[in-house]
View 1 (cartoon, rainbow, N blue to C red):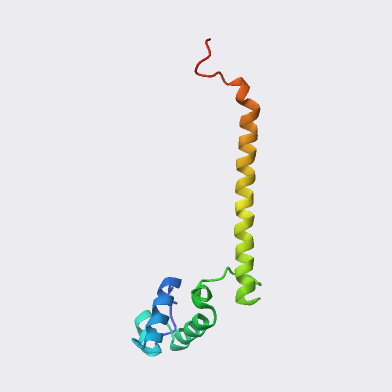
View 2 (spheres, one colour):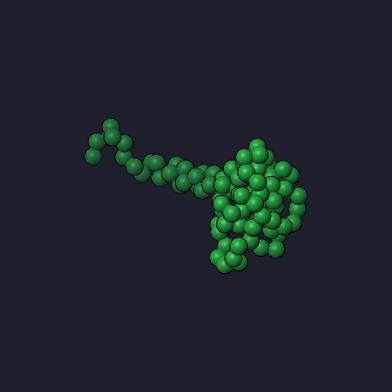
Length: 114
């Protein structure tokens, strides 16, 4: 196999590959040839999947913290980020409602006469 351009394989494809391996439908070498990756890469996917399930196959964001922490710690960091985003969205919505409440007296109602 050449060591040229790397093939990008999505998390969903990795999951299907690993499930096929675990079911005995494919060997690691067959999967590697089919998807244009090394056998070692396929074996790493299988190992990560067995250790952490599908969440272990999702690409982590690049950076120094990429490989740090257990799967539980990474999951909790992700959940924290999602909660921060939800709080930010709720804060913006609250400010919009508050501003609207300040201006409600300035808007004529449909039943008022000019």
